[in-house]
Image 1 (cartoon, rainbow over the protein chains, first blue to last red):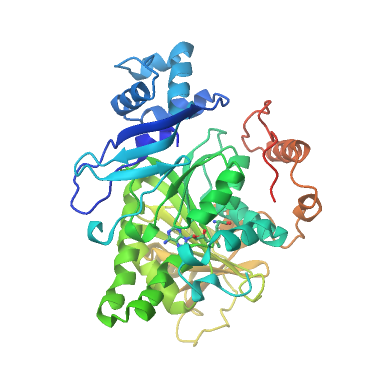
Image 2: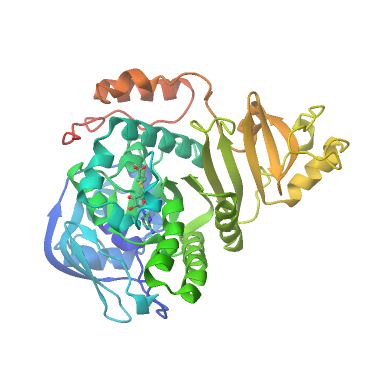
Length: 122
Length: 346
Ligand SMILES: C[S@@+](CC[C@H](N)C(=O)[O-])C[C@H]1O[C@@H](n2cnc3c(N)ncnc32)[C@H](O)[C@@H]1O
């Protein structure tokens, strides 16, 4: 699972009002190089929660993203490269995602988070 | 799929390891699913600017539908309730991220972040899952409201996570008119507008239905512009004479503006527009193109047939991209990643 997906996911357990961002527990992570598409990054930028991305990337061992950004910085190739790497090349392989409100663990195995809810969470 | 899986067991049980492999190794299924996905993508009608969008593939299974999205340069997140199907997707090294998730429990995404969604041959399964609740739990009281709650949770959460104006296209094989109406009803209640596009309505084999949803109020493009309604065609079929025939083009257009859902039946050169079981107008394919989507000529035999045996190599992708460019579509540039080799599909 890439941090792009982590940035979109939100816990939808019944009663949870703010399920974002999910905490991350890392047992294993990988990096997979992919081609950069700056147009995609620029259109995604407005939808990304930057702080959540910075925090998640830091946990994954990548701390080169600036804490603060604004749209004008997207002109910088250097920033785009970092943004690309954090968003699309870091993968959580084994571990868990944690609901920020309830602490419920969603296990991640082979890169696939198990988001199935129990009867009493629906 | 000759015997419909949803009548046999709930999806996470039906699609066990053996079935998941069988499904994905059938070249017939691979071809059908990729055709359905291409058509769904066409109906999704994403902006023609070559910029990848972030899409959902709901009930992504082993990634056959997602692969079509990747081939079109889109980013996607796939979710499915069957871990065996997802395992096969992993083996096939699909490009999208995968989630083990039951759409009937609602989708857990932030609001407004997703650019569009497709779902290929999956919706009818999740709805019918409730039938099995009934059989297995023998709890009539519970099972009567479970499907409704599941549909409500699903469409409600889908509506929230889609960006305003985003679309969702569900190819499905509804079990009955009642099931389709139930699904449509919940989509509408969640705030969607749209309709059902029926390709080849008169062929039992080729008939394909696509539920087409737009996030937000009916857009102007769904309301028929007056001048383009093709009149003079009598709506012979299923019409009881009392209305339709004598209506002027104008009043028909007005009617169409006021409905958020209608059926588009394909009959030869024309699409019948049906609402509440009545044919209310015919429009030409050309007009439907303008209205809804760009529809390639489905009557022609598929060019795909020749290529599927050999698999879609880099050459095929480059050729296809070139064709798309000639048609004036914006297509991502060719790079060293284009059509790169993936693990063999068994
Ligand atoms: C016929 S397969 C289609 C798979 C893929 N879309 C394709 O085109 O090949 C239907 C898929 O829907 C999934 N499905 C059924 N009910 C579901 C639910 N409630 N939530 C998520 N996935 C579901 C099944 O597990 C199965 O993988």
